[in-house]
Structures are given as C-alpha cells and as structure tokens.
Image 1 (cartoon, rainbow, N blue to C red):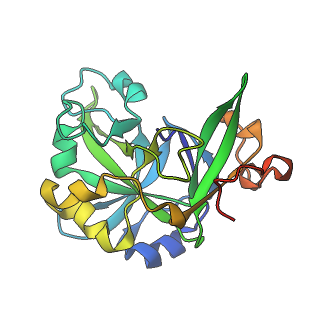
Image 2 (spheres, rainbow, N blue to C red):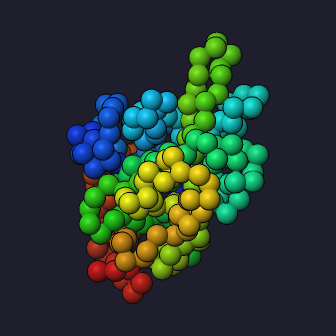
Length: 229
C-alpha cells in the first residue's frame, strides 16, 4: 500500500522535470496523509500537461456520497481494470502523483518501525494514480485521486508486501494517455536498484508532524543487509 509520502521539490523543479504547461502552487510537505489535497499531474482536454491539487481518496463518479473516498486511497494494480470502483478511471483517467519518496511501516515485534523509501538519484519520481470527478450536492465537482499499488521489489520486500507503481520517465506519457494495453507492463514493481530505504523516526506516524526531520535516517537502526548503500 501507500499511506504517506513526501514531496519536497518546489513547483519550478516539477515544471522542468515533468514538462508541465500549468502548475498549481504548493509548499513542501514531509508527511502527506490521505484525505488531503495533493499535487497530481494530468492531461487537460486541450492536450496540456497540468498539475492541480486533488483530494487523496478516490470517490467514483457513481458514488452516493464522498465518504467512500476514505476507503479508496489505493487501488491494487492487479485488479484495478476490473474493480467497479477503479475500472473506468483505469481506462480513461490515469494520472501521475509526483513524490520525493514515501513511507511504509514494518512490524518489528510489538512495534511498527517506519521506513522512508526514495529514489537513489534524488529526483522526484512519479507514482501511478487514477482520478475521478464527483458531483457534490451543491453542484460543484470534487476531484479525487488514488495511488496504484503492486507487490514489492527487493528493497520493499523486507519492509512491506505492497508498494506504489513507480512510472519511469520514458513511460509517463503512456501512463497518462496510452491505451490500457500499453500500460499493463507498467503495473509492476520498479527495478530495486533505483530505490534506497532507511528507518526513520516514529514521529511520522502522527499526521500533525510535518518537517524535514521525518526523513532523516535513524542511524542506530540501520542494520538490514537488504537495504542498498
């Protein structure tokens, strides 16, 4: 799964890296939880690549109310094309969720130790997402998003059994606009050598904490041989 992530890159950096034609303003965040508005990259009807803020927690267009979004933060990539909650978006409304890294928790005895997983090259990555528009009772549209997940690669396997789809740069356009057949190969864990992981403070478990210290390694806990140097 993907329950928290980090985006510290400023808008100017994302404009260059993702070739954005339009970019909403936002600030650096180090502990982004579901239920909040997050930066999302989509294609506009006139073919522009744009970044807007969407609510994290997918509300399908057919939903009776928006509370369903709290249960749909992630979509399992193996079944997203068939599940009623995701299949329309999987076919027609895919997006990229830019991130500097993400958190996952590993059960260690009676406690859960959080880890920060991020690209070795330090560049913002793109998690595969799905988005929807839902008409609110007042007639306005609520645009929401979920993150697509798959099984783990070698870096993630010691930590958790799920991870987000990470779309490589040369396939961003395919994910955004290609037919379903063109993206099936992307619904898979990324190459392990692209990522690194280390244990971090358990403060990240509190959504009220949001500061750069949350991604600093807990040096006394770095001992797992499966984590790349």
